[in-house]
Amino acid sequence: MSRRFSPPLFFLFFLCSTPLILTQLNDDPTIKTMHDFSGYPLHDPSNPFKSSDSISNSLSVDAQTLQKQIDELSTFSDAPAPSVTRILYTKNDVLARRYIKNLMGLAGLSVREDAVGNIFGRWDGYEPALTAVATGSHIDAIPYSGKYDGVVGVLGAIEAINALKRSGFKPKRSLEIILFTSEEPTRFGIGCLGSRLLAGAETLAEALKMMVDGQNISFLEAARSAGYARDEDDLSSVFLKKDSYSAFVELHIEQGPILEKEGISIGIVTNIAAPASVKVDFEGNGGHAGGVLMPERNDAGLAAAELTLAVEKHVMDSGSIDTVGTVGILELHPGAINSIPSKAHLEIDVRDIDEDRRNAVIEKIHNSAKLIAKKRKVTLSVFKIINQDPPAQSENSIIKAMEAASKELNLTRKYMVSRAYHDSLFMARISPMGMIFIPCYKGYSHKPEEYASPQDIENGVKVLALTLAKLSLS
Image 1 (cartoon, one colour):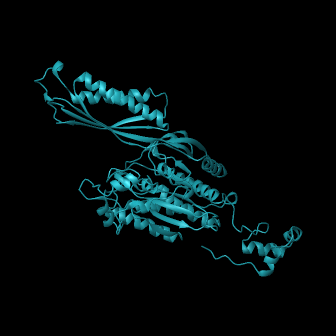
Image 2 (image 1 turned 90 degrees about the vertical axis):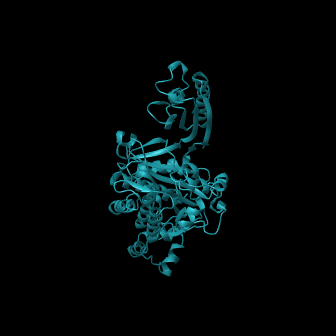
Image 3 (image 1 turned 180 degrees about the vertical axis):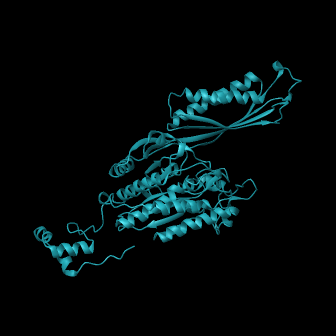
C-alpha cells in the first residue's frame, strides 16, 4: 500500500477558507499541483477518498494471479487432479485454510477465527464504528468435485479488496471477508454449518456436542484436531447478533447453464430457494423373485418407484417453474436381482422460493406415500422431514448496488433465482443479503469438469469490488 503524504499546513488553511477562495485556488496551477500530489480532493476536504463512482475505470483485477491461486488451492485435495476433495477438518482442509489466511495477511487484512473455524479478514474503514460490509464463501469440496465452487467467492473477495486498494479507494464502513466452515454437508451431514451457527442456530450448537461422523469421530474431536474449539464445548460464542453487518454479498459460479447459454456476464440473484429434505422408508414382505406371484406381492421397491413418480407429479403441478423436486437417494434391500425388495429407502429434496408452496408439495407427497402404502400393502414406516429452511430474498438496496456496478462496468446482467444452497441463505437471517453469479461451463458443478473462465471470474470480481465500495459508503 503506497504511503500517503500529509498536505502542508498552509494548504490546509486554504482548504478551510471560503468558497470564493476555493474558486480562486482552482485557477492557481501551483495549488492544483499540490492537490494532485497530495491526493486530497480540493472541494471535499471532509472525505479525502475516492467515491465508488470514480473507481470503475481504474479497477484492475490481476486475473492471472487469481487463476494461479485457484489452481494452487486445488492441490490441497484428497483426490488426484482434476478432481478436488476437501473435507471438513482434514489435513488438506487445514492446509487450505492456512493458505487463505496467508493471502488475507498479504492483503493487509486483520485475521481472526471463531470456535468452529469460520475465518474473518477485515479491512478497517475510516469510520470503523459503523457496521461492516461482508463478503465471502467456502472452500470445502465434496468428494471428486471441482475447484471453483465457493473458491471463487473467497479468493475473488481477496482480489476484490486488493483491486480496491490499488485503485486508491478507502472504505467508509469496514469490509470483511468470511471463509465459512463446512458449506458442504459431507462429513457431518449438515450443510452450511458455519453460517448456520453464525446465524444463531442453537439447536445445531447443542446437537454438534454429540454428533459423530462415519468413522465415529465426534464433531468436537475433529474440530480440536484442526485447532478449533480447544477450550469450549459451548459453541454459542460463534453466534452473531442480528445486524452485525450492514450488508453481505457473495460471489459464486452459477452452478447452472443459463448465463452461459444466454451469453450474459452477470447474474443478480433476487431469491435463494431453500430445500426441505425428507426421508421415507417402505417395508414389505420380500420373497423369492420366482416363487411369489405378482398378485401376492408386497413390494417395497415398487412403492418407492411409484412415490418417485408422485414427487415429479406434485412438483410439476405446483403451478410454478420455481418448484423443483429430486429423489436423490433410492436404496433397496436386500439388493439382489432375484429377491423382491422387502425394504426401500428414499431421500427427497424439494425446493422453492415460496415456502408455503414448497410445504404444500411436501404434504401432497406425504399423502401419496400413505395411499401408495395402502394400495401396495406395504408399511410406510418412516416419513421424516429432516429440515425445512425458509427461503431468502436479496435486499433491494443490494440488488440496486449490484446492478449499478454491472452497468458502470458495461457488463450484461439478468435477475436470477438461486436454487442451490449457499451460505447467503443463512447470512440473510442476520444481515441484508445479495449474491452475484458468473457463468460456468455448461452449468457443471460438483464434478471435475466444473470451470469458469478467467474473464468471467474477472468480471465477477470487478462487480463485487464495485458493489462493496458502494455499500461501504452508504
